[in-house]
Amino acid sequence: MIISRLAFGSFLLLIVSSMAFYEETWASSPTLEYMREIRVHKIESPDQSEATQVRVLLPPDLDTNKLYPVIYVLPVEQGSESRFGDGLLEVREHRLHKKYNCIFVAPTFSQLPWYADHPDNKEIHQESYFLKTVVPFVEKTYPVSNKPEDRLLLGFSKSGWGAWSLLLRHPNYFGLAAAWDAPLMMKQIGKYGNGPIFGTQENFETYRIDNLLRANAESLQDQPRLILTGIGNFAEHHEQAHQLLEELKIPHHYRDTPERSHNWHSGWVSEAVELLMKED
Image (tube, rainbow, N blue to C red; front, top):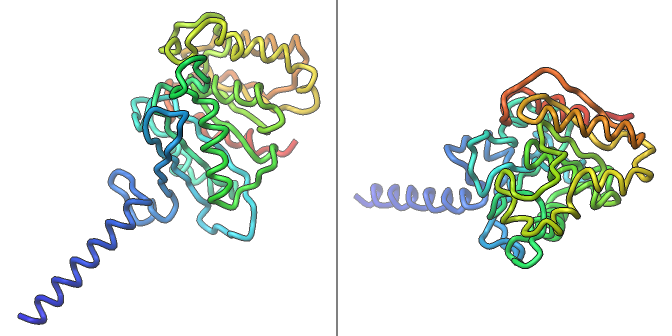
């Protein structure tokens, strides 16, 4: 009986230890391999209405004495919703973190992410949250480079817009941005749930991609920093964005085929990451 009690006590201790470990590395149905590669952090920020998460996918042979480039996999949905798939799991599925020896980061947002600061509601400051909370946390916690050319942005649809707007509004902070099947040429507030995030047309104007391209055209002449791929829901937007880039003589990577489904898992992520990591 004493042996049984001791064994039961050891079993309880093992469970408690495992629970403590899962708090930091939780994921739905996690495997040991998943937990070795993906770490999950709970984040509190005054720029968001509730706690958020930052998931970090590490290279298998992480060297803490080395500084790695980081690709931010920007979400298209609020919180941990995944109707359009999971970008970080797509990266992991294709082992892109190993292939390119790069760290990938996927934050969440407490509202539908449009990567903008609301003019009045301080709890919908998505741009500030990303710049002042997410990126500094990652750079403090992990061995990532803080050089602009090593901060890279990947997104589609809303987050493709977000990737481009973040780079164009902060060209000295980020290196490259890739957008796949994104509504880049929107000119009016109110579509795709963006009204509550931008707040006013006046505020929206400061995030409009076409306005930002014109304002930054001269500083973007040196090398391709914008990546535009995919044909799907927003083919017309991509064609117009490509034409504007050509008119402004802004070098960029452009791929308009093949047509794919509008989600993270339709086969476009590998090409976009390849272009982000390409050395010109």
